[in-house]
Length: 413
Image (tube, rainbow, N blue to C red; front, side, top):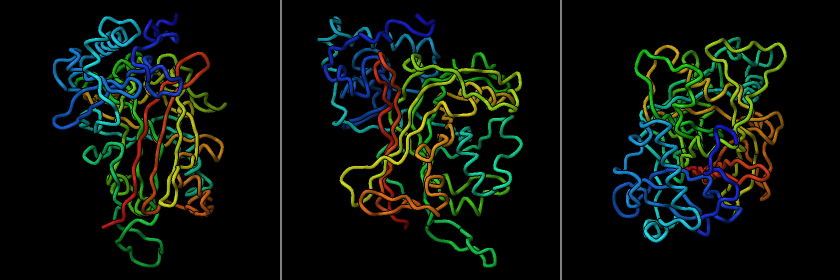
């Protein structure tokens, strides 16, 4: 058995929660993601199991409903909680009678942002996305010289991070389509999504003390889905010289469950293979740990009863690894705190149907996407619902799902 695996990953493991044994479930007993939920009053901490949520406080697994405090305890505490959950939820467990009263249906609760997010950093690690977008704006020089040497990122706005299911208002802003005329102010006409994954920091580091690359993953509590909504026309006008601002911070949607690093261990893989001639990472960034995570983008327009899939990609296509993001972020002494969110950047592959944004899929609006209803999309329209999904699957291993990250576009005010 791999040193990263234990009995909680056993493919044969079954739960006394019957819905967790469905081969199509997002949340088998081998997953056990964590989140915050409520029914009538205060937020509670819960673990997803099948179509249910186990209340961790009522089950006696945590003292306080404080996800950040739990994450701050580090990887050993996270692993121990997972082992206790697995032992109590597996078939034949003595905890069954007591824990049955701690379960509630997922459909009966409200899910929130899974923890208190103090800071948010958005990276740009998808080389296929960066190259495609670069060709749209700089055909002769799609990748800037620093891209293959340093993980590129910017600091976003944590206050506008919202949970899945929250409607997103089309932003107003300055745009300038005609270079010979002054800019105008009004609703964005080129609203887009970006399919990303987010890494949630567990235990942080002290100010002035960088995290070595070999310890970087110990500071990652788990993963969630991120939709980095983007107003492309506002972004084009404002991003030089300091980068994204109002084109990005009007809303960022995240999924409600944190899939822990422990749950993803069976899907560790080697990192992205750099092309011949690409520079090797500098010594402080030497790492070879990737994760095999499928991602999908679905769209439902106001005329549709069922959504349609627009793209399918894989997290393996990211140029920089998760450990490299953490090590670089802290390399200057920056202190990460429990609950900080690091987003991957748009996940895109080499084929058109793996592109993780409409900017790429519709080629900056010049190649509209045709939908089954006869509608077309260059960018998002009011009433459109974007649904992002992520999961890990491999023959002989239970499917590990992330749930969904949804958002409906509302008209600007």
